[in-house]
Length: 125
Image: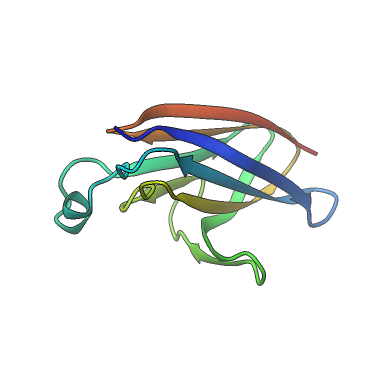
């Protein structure tokens, strides 16, 4: 079974009240968190990665496509909850970036049908 863990979580200020939060989720096993056939045929539940916190408003978010340019595959609705249809690949990782307004504690939570739930809290300031 897949075992997921949070890798580096980076918080960078864009101005006094707006920050980017970039989180890495790693899979330490060879089995992906969502099987390719399940993803192709919409079988089972997709993984869900979320960012929440009092005093924080998520303005945008998505899967980080290029760490050098900051290009993301933006989510149109509810960017605080990222649906990962393909999950986290075996022995691989994914990076998600959110743009948040406000300061406080951000709780990152990844829920997977096969890998269970993991969470991490980081300060946004």
